[in-house]
Length: 248
Image 1 (spheres, rainbow, N blue to C red):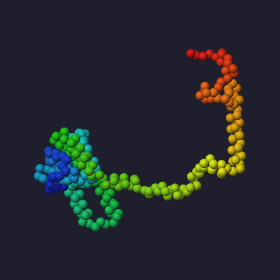
Image 2 (image 1 turned 45 degrees about the vertical axis):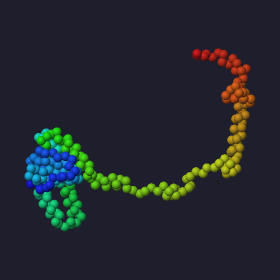
Image 3 (image 1 turned 60 degrees about the vertical axis):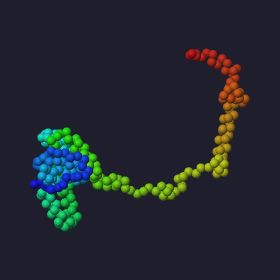
């Protein structure tokens, strides 16, 4: 037997009120009534004022079903993580009156409850109302996020804080390179380093001297006629490229 209670229709936060909507609970038709999609609850009432009320966190799925092979009419399908019948309510009352018991018993009870579902189909006489019914349910259910999902998100970001200053102290100063100015660098040279520096400077001086003896080029007296300060000896290069083919 399906549990129908004498309840008052919601008066606040009603997003949609759909009359002439038949409720089918686990294959049992409850007759035509009015569906109320409110911000706090989802509820349905028959013509006598009897009905049922659903908490949004208990609703695990809702969708528009147009598959006539599973049900002869298009409807709004709702899956609830609980049983909405007299036997289930009696069992819940018995459990509430009993002692909590040991943790093992509570764990077994939770596993049994998690496998209990109820399928509800809301069939409006006006099938054009299915889209507004679905949208209203989406909006209201978004107001009641699953607290377990929120706890999971918090766990993902939990962890020890990274202290930059502490990390730098642990690493010490040994890994940080030391920089010197030119004068400071010379003062820290060893005898071997000084000899290497003298050798390099001698090689550099020899390389600079060689550039003044390049064939056909005089760089000892730069001319202002050339941007790079080089003056080409015309006598040295005259006729050098007479046989070259130039593409114009």
